[in-house]
Length: 98
Image (cartoon, rainbow, N blue to C red; front, side):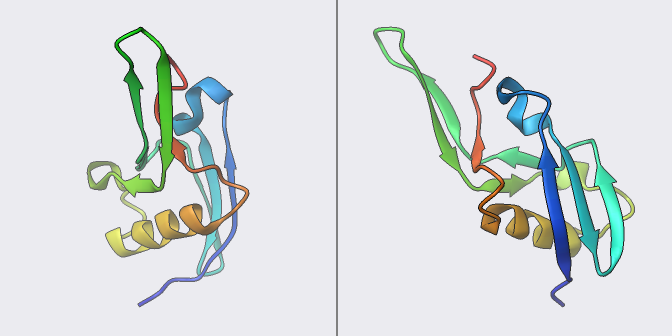
């Protein structure tokens, strides 16, 4: 069953901690605030042989270990899908803290 995910907003503390944001979202008409991430960046960071630091952006990924008790895995998957489809939420990228 697809859940109704609306009014999604992702607030980040800084550009260097993008993966540690606070997610506000309405799920099936009820408002939730998540301040402990159950999402992880799908992107990666790497350092070249000459020491240059790079990051690649990719879709957010569900971290099943940290799904809050108040929602199901299915709802969490719907939220991750909504995050990845919302143009206001940047794609997941790791390495901003480098």
